Figure: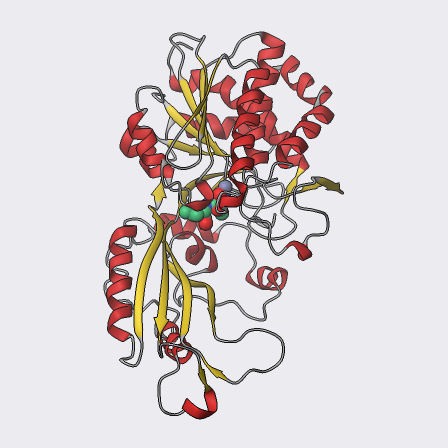
Length: 460
Ligand code: BES
Ligand code: ZN
C-alpha cells in the first residue's frame, strides 16, 4: 500500500485537474435542455474508466438518462464490490449567488467550489482515482470491482429499479459501496447506516376560471392562495407533528441504544442554529435535533407560487395557486402509502371554494443498513487508516432511493462511506468539496479494497 499511497500523493495535482474537467460538464438531470450534457458526461465517465484500466465499460441506455457500467474482474475467488454513484447534478440556480461560476471549479483555501463537487461527482471520482493508483502501481486489484454510475439520482432514480432488475446478473456482487453521504463533521470520518426516504407531491388549486380584479370580486369568492395557505398551515400541529391521519403508523421507534449513542455525539444546538442563521430551531417536540434529522419523518413545503409576484403592486384575485411539498420518510414507512394518505387528507381539508389536484412527483424508500457486516468492518478499518482517526456511526436525513432496491433486487447490503461535509452547500449555491477529505477519501477507498478480502474471509 505504500506505493499506492505514494502514487496518490504524487499525482494529486493531476487528479484535481481531471476532477475539474468532470465538474465542467453541466449534467443537470432535471432539465431537458441539458440532455446533451448528460450524454457527454456519461461518455466522459466511461472514457475515464477506460483510461484508468477498467476493461469492460458500457454506456447503457434506460428510458431516461444512461447508466455507465464498468467492470474489472481479474481477481477470481475474491469478493466483488459494486461501486454506485451518480454523475447527474442539481440545477445551479440561483446563479447570482455563486462566488465563482458553478461549472468552473475553483479552489479557495482548502475547498473546491463547483456544482457536483461534493454531490456526487467528487465522491465518485474518489473511487476512480483510488483504483487508478492501485492498478498503476500493482497492476492488479485485491477484489473484483463493478461500477454503476447513474444519471437520474437527483430526480428520484426513476428508471434505475427496472435497470437493476433487468441487469441483476451483470450487477452480481458481494456488496455495494456508495460514497454519496457526509461525514459527521470536519475531521470526524463516519459510516452512515440509515437514510430517509421521500414522497414528493405537488398540489394545484384553482378558484375562478381566470384572474379577477380584486376590487370588483374580492369578498365574493375564496382566493386560492388563501385556501392553499390554510391547507399548508393545517399540515403540522403546535408540537411540530404532522397531522395527516395514519402518517406515523409505520414509523419505527428509535431504540434506547440509538438514542443513547446519538446523545454522546459532539453536537451543539446553539451553534447549529447560529451556523444556519436562525434564531431558534424548530421540530417535533420530544426528540433531539439529531433524532429529528435522522430518524423522524418530516413534511416540508419546497416551493409555493400563485398570483402576482412581479415588481410593485397589482390588485388581482388570482385564479390559481400551487405548492410543492415533500415528506422525508423513515423505516418502515412506504412512500406509496404516505403519498396516498397525503392525497386523501388534502382532498378532505380543501375548502369547497376551490378545486384541488394532488400529484405524486416521485418517491424513494427509507433505508437502514447493517453495521455489523464484513463490509462495514472493512470500511471502519479503512477510514481509520485513511484519516488517522476512529470513525463514528451515524444516520443521515437525505435519500438515496436505490439503496433499498439493491437489497431487494440483488440481495446485497450497501456500505455508505461518505466523504462530504454537512455544510458543503449541496443543492445550493457555492457547493464545495473539502480537499483534505477528497484525498483522505481516495486513501480510504484504496484501503477499503485492500482490507475487504480479509474481512469477507473469502479467498483472502
Ligand atoms: N447525496 C444526496 C443524498 C444525501 C443527502 C445523503 C444528504 C445524505 C445527506 C443525494 O444526491 C440526494 O440529494 N438525493 C435526493 C434524492 C431524491 C431526489 C429522491 C435527496 O435526498 O433529496
Ligand atoms: Zn448525491
